[in-house]
Figure 1: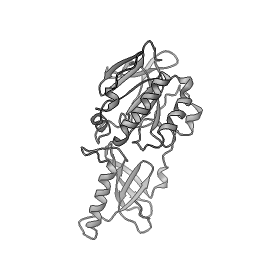
Figure 2: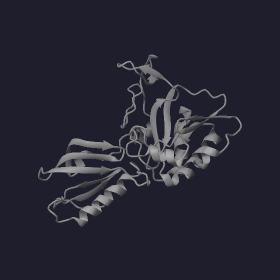
Figure 3: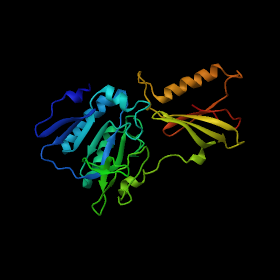
Figure 4: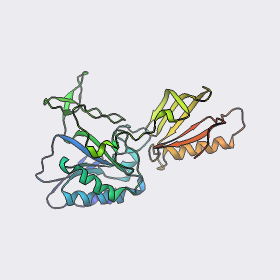
Length: 285
């Protein structure tokens, strides 16, 4: 269990557990139904340092927050087959919206040096472990077309509508993106910058995907393997990139055998890919 999970709640704060999370809230505070929430991700080695910073900041500024209670919980949250839309969310903060930018900038000054897994459902602020997503602050639900109770938010007409939680950024059409955040909305490299075209997903997990594709230069069929840094952790806390590098090493040792393909390695923001070697493609790792 993380040290922060054992710290006593300070006077004036309520304390409780929600699944794998410990939650602290100023007594008497009434949270708004919804808004921009702050998610902070963490690598295994930095988790204790990050939650200590978040704890002190939230207490100082009277911000409700929750955090994963243990190293094992963080490992599970970032494991290979954990739901991708929920993965990486180590701490969650529920700030006053009028002070959102101030809190983000202050936290970024304290946390930007830490490497952390990418939260697929959120907008990443700058290059650090801070992410933002518009969603419910309290337990709101509505009925799906299948008759199930699902997470919800309220639209301007007062109607509860689905709060979709998918592994990609989705902002409700009635929500305005804060000006300071708009510049970070889409930082992903364009797919047309890659030396291959993806035609089909063969397998997908929290660690990345396996795709069927074609090389742009000569239309040769290829298989692309993707690895997300600090995500898809195994029981030894090794991430998907570590396993892909092991695969690269094995391919190097088997190079020249007719039973194994040639390969090339490319890197881009948030992932590493292995694909068959092309004479015009620079190999870097």
